[in-house]
Length: 79
Image (cartoon, rainbow, N blue to C red; front, top):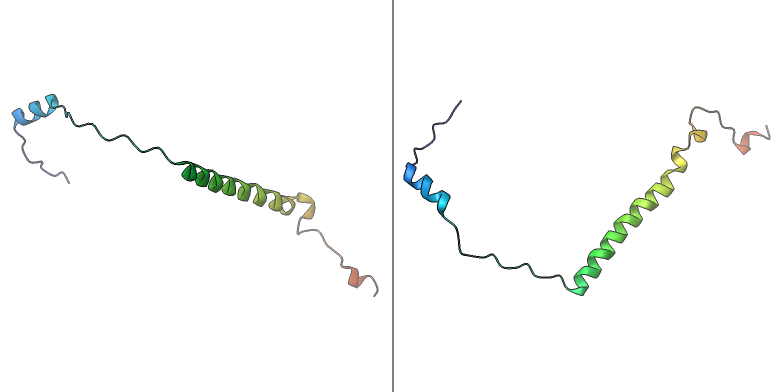
């Protein structure tokens, strides 16, 4: 159930609290203009796809086209 942790000397723990690194991480590179343009085009494509699927899917969600209603085809009118 419970694992026994390895004993750590108290002096090591106390020293670790005082330690501060003098190494500064490098600054991230700024994206170029072509990268920004590509990212924005991908974002616009995703948004346009979502809006298009919503526009094409709304007629299928219309309650007036419920499958429970009896539909008559034009071919059955002449009989």
